[in-house]
Length: 315
Image 1 (cartoon, rainbow, N blue to C red):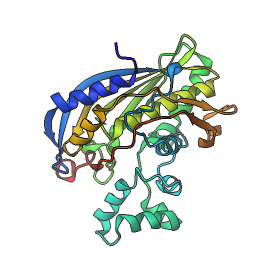
Image 2 (tube, rainbow, N blue to C red):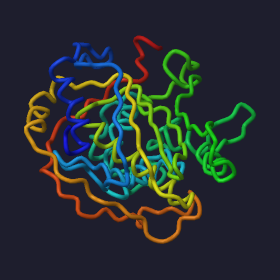
Image 3 (cartoon, rainbow, N blue to C red):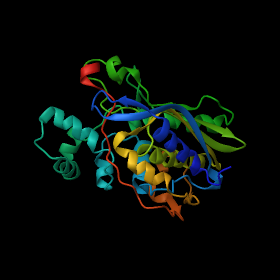
């Protein structure tokens, strides 16, 4: 039996490298090597699952989750925090509309310094924050899915119905009306919160997973979400369970994966949230303290902006 729970992730990484089936993204022509169906589990009482075989971008994890939790869908908050993991998607939309009149760097600068420009071009409609906290109901209401989950578990800790979904078919692919298709592929699309042995547990279903770049980030993000929800509910965090549909490596990540697999995991860090957090809206990133994070150096790799709406297929 392996000593550290990080080996669960490393085994998925190894499997994609050695057994992944070659596939081609129809939008970009980029090859991936893909497997289907897996599950890993982390007991959050045994440490916070920030992977150690390469350093994970903690500031990005923390501020992105707050971006989701606060119901935001404009990248300006992230840009202002110097977190640029979402820049490519609104920039891709801007280029399709206006050509290359602005470089990506110029586009981001305008998002940061021109509030009107940010309002117009920094928005990513039908993205996680909107769908978690203000799902557009057919009668014009906004449904706060995550707020309901917290309220439901306070009333009924034995509830089996506390799910949050980001998969809204009316805005996805060719199911959407012309011009209404979401331009970002919803990847981590469903999670369920459950209380077991008095502790708050969370299971994520991720239908599509970039195993090298995205998954380490996703693990940390949803583990943090589990801890935040436990704090709000006045309980201890239990397990974070990560269930995968299609998990894959990009062809230009092969050497980076080999480098990561050559490294030995280290003990996970610890995480604590200071002060009381009585509600979702009371949570702030400043309350979170990550301690004793000792990781191997980062491994750089190029992000492929792929998936989601494809005009040739879904137009």
